[in-house]
Length: 314
Image (cartoon, rainbow, N blue to C red; front, side):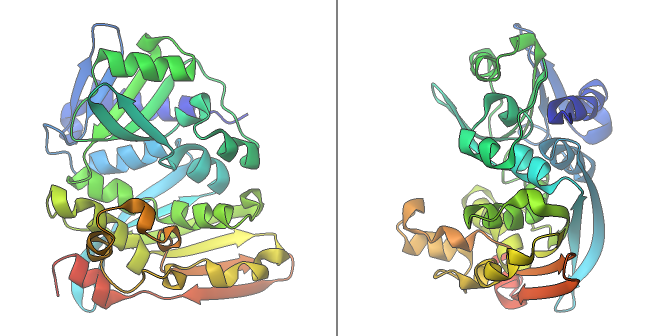
């Protein structure tokens, strides 16, 4: 059986051993837990961003960068492909673990979730559960976790704290921008899962999204989400003729909040997430190649105007 933690550990070990090659910093705590700082007190960069995204996907994806354009404006793009979309995206990458210990708070994602089963329902619907004596977690936070935090993570994963590894970067950082844009395929798989579709029928996924500029802590969350909401383009290959019943609900343009930068929507909602239509968190455009009937579907479309407005370029 594929172990997302075992796959990710090999990647983590390299950046932990040679952090200077990634503009990162490595720390071993008194309890033996290992931490890589990829953007809290260091600059990070594209290499660290690739590693963060790779670890987050449990080592089951290919991540590349390219230079593209939005209405003639040059913009870096991330490309993500995986042949294990349900496991990589839902079983690992999904930010399904709120790590809160004392005053410490972080959004947790990555392979460790497949040991802690957070949330359990996700693993029930994809039929996956990891078995590994090491837990590797990705933390979206502007602070590094202390020993107490890592101990709690270890307990949830049922591993020794000395076998617990974390890579950390704030949303408002180069690595933060890269890893959130790198969730482009995940948003499509996640949306289908939320609609009740059996994501195990997805054979492969390929996605691209612009890597947003770093615009500061107050705007970071909105800007990074807008990269996929308004400009994420995803291609899925599957054997599931019933997908035709889900098509219209997949893209972000079906959401009530669609059409404005996320930070404007968030402000209008009184900064209350629960007032935001969750269907907004979807890719802009999706192409589906359904193999059993040999058909291709296309839904949605990119919105360069809102993308550039969010990025501060229009």
